[in-house]
Amino acid sequence: MERDKDKFDRRLNTLADYCMTSVRFDPELYTKFDVKRGLRDSTGKGILTGLTEISDVVGIQSKNGRNLPVDGSLYFQGYNVEDLIAGSQDSCTGFEEVAYLLLFGQLPNRQQLEEFLEILGSYRELPPNFVRDIIMNSPNGNMMNVLQKSVLTLYSYDPSPEDISIKNVLRQSLQLIAQFPLISVYGYHSYRHYILDKSLVIRRPKPELSTAENILRLLRPNGQYTKLEAKVLDVALILHADHGGGNNSTFTTHVVTSTGTDTYSAIAASLGSLKGPRHGGANMKVLLMFQDIMQHVSDWEDEEELNRYLKAILDRKVFDHKGLIYGIGHAVYTLSDPRCVILKRFAKELSEAKGLTREFALYDRVERLAKELTQKERQFFKPLCANVDFYSGFIYSMLGLPMELFTPIFAISRIAGWSAHRLEELANEGKIIRPAYKYVGNHKEYKPLDER
Image (tube, rainbow, N blue to C red; front, side, top):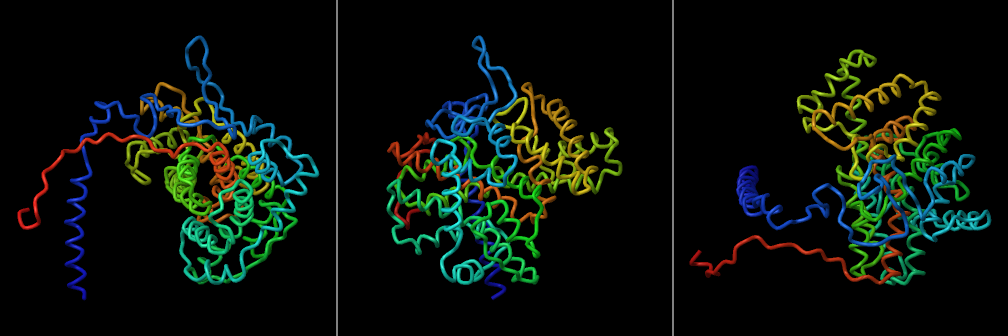
C-alpha cells in the first residue's frame, strides 16, 4: 500500500506540472487585449458593473476634473455609519438597527425595532438535533467550512427552499441572520471538544438578547460579559455589515443570485468567497504579524528598532516572507478608512478597561510608521491608510474571541448585507451576470487516441 501511495504521489506531481504548464500564459496578454484584470482599471479602480442603493464607499472626491484623496466615508442606505454608531451608543442593538436599515431602506422606529428583534429572537434556533447531527458529527478547525456546510444543509429543512419570491427570500434571510451566530459558536465548541479535547458547554441563546450579547454569552464558559464588551462587539458587527456592492463576497452574492438559484446556494458561495485570506481572513494575519513583532522587537517604544523590523517584513526577511505589512492600504480609501478610525477609538477604550494600553500604543505606533515606510519602500504616490483589519483582530482578542471565529464574526455581520443585496438583485430582475473572457489559446486539430 505504501508503494502504491508513492507511485500515485509521483503521478500526481507529474500531472500537476502538466497542469501548471497548460494553464499559464504570457501576462503581457492582459495589456495587449486591455483586459480589466480583477474588474479594475489601470489605476486600481473597480469597473462599474452594477447599481445599488444599499451602501456607498467614498475615498476620493472629484474637483475640477481631478480625483482628490479625502477622509473615507461609509454610508448605509444614505446614512453615514459614524452617525449610526453615535446614535446607538446607549444600546447593544445597533447591529439589528443596521440590518433593518439595509433590508428595508429606512431606520426603524422603536416599535418596528422591537418587532424586528422579536422576529430575530424567534428565529434564533436551529432545527431539532441539527447541532448534534450536522455540526458535531464532523467537527473541523475551520468555522467558515462549518458555516458553509451548515447553510447548505439547512436547505433540506426548509419547506420552500427553491421559492425565490421576495417574501420567502426575506424569511430565509432573517433566519440566516439569526442562525449564523449559533452555527459559528457551536462549531467552535465542537472543534474545541472533539479535536482539542476540551470541556464541552453548550448554551441556548436568549431571544431577548442582541446578536453581540448572545455571541459573548454562548461563547464564554460562565456566560458573563460587560456592557462595554457587548457594545464594542456590536460596533464591530455594524462596521462589517456591508461595504458597497463591489467587494468580492457581495459581488459573488449578486453573480450567483443572478442565475436564479436558491438562497442557501447563493449564501454558501458568498461564504466561500469571504473565507479567502485576501478578503475575510486578513485580520488574522494582522494579529499574527503583531504577535511576531512583539516577540522579536525588544523595546516596543524604540521607533528605530520597530522601523527596522517593519522594513525587514517588507523585504520578505521575517514573519511570513510575503513582503506585506497587513492591515495597511485599501483599494478605495486613501486618507483614512472610517471603519478603522471608529474601531481604533473603541480599541483604545477597551484596552484601558483590560489593562492593555501598552499593546494599544504599539498598534498606534506601527500604524503610523508602517504607512510612511510602505509608501516610501513601494514608491506609492497616493496616500496609504490603515484599513478595518488593522484593529479588528486586536479587539476580538481583547474580547476573548478565539482566532478560529475571527472570519465567522465577519460573516455573522455581512450576512445582513449579502441578504440585502440578494433581495435587491431579485427585485430588479437583472440579466445573468456574465463578464467576457478573451480566448488566447490556439485552435488544434483533433487526433485519435492511438495517433497521439
